[in-house]
Amino acid sequence: MSQRGKPRQTRRTSAQAGSPRRGLLIRITAGVAILAIVGAAIAIQAGGGADDPGVAFTINAPTDGATVSSPVTLDVALHGSQLGSPGDGLDHLHLSLDGGQPIAEYSSSRLPLQIPSGRHTLTVELAGPDHAPLLPDRSVTFTVTG
Image 1 (tube, helix red, strand yellow):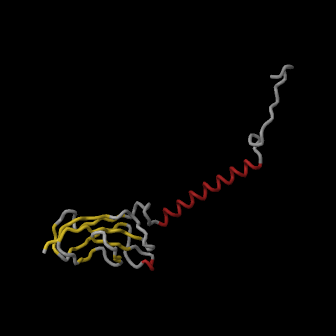
Image 2: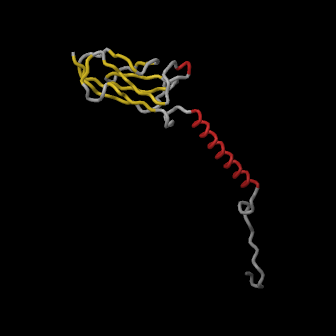
Image 3: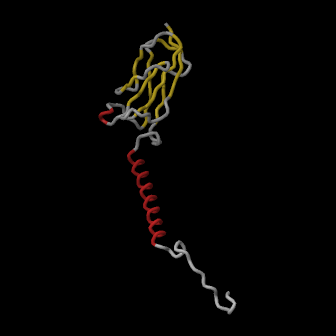
């Protein structure tokens, strides 16, 4: 209160008064938030990619620590993914033996591999049409006899 018993008038700043600049900022922020939500929804519906919980793979054979003979049967179980030509928008496998140069496999998740005798580590990666990994790679170490 002022000295004469009247309420004191305070001056409001433009931010408090709901200035056009503040209103514009709120509308822009809301618009960006809506675009982010819509974009996330579209990405989820499109599927695929590392964030897709429906995409998975496991190496069924050979098993880690196994002793096998050559040819070694590689058996990969795929879930939510289809192998085929990247040109057709399909996924494929990258296979690497003992850290060597990876080779791509487009048609089968079960194949015989000619591997020399000894202890080996086979790394398998599920890749998208752009050759980028969809998930972390998986490795198994096994021994090939005779």
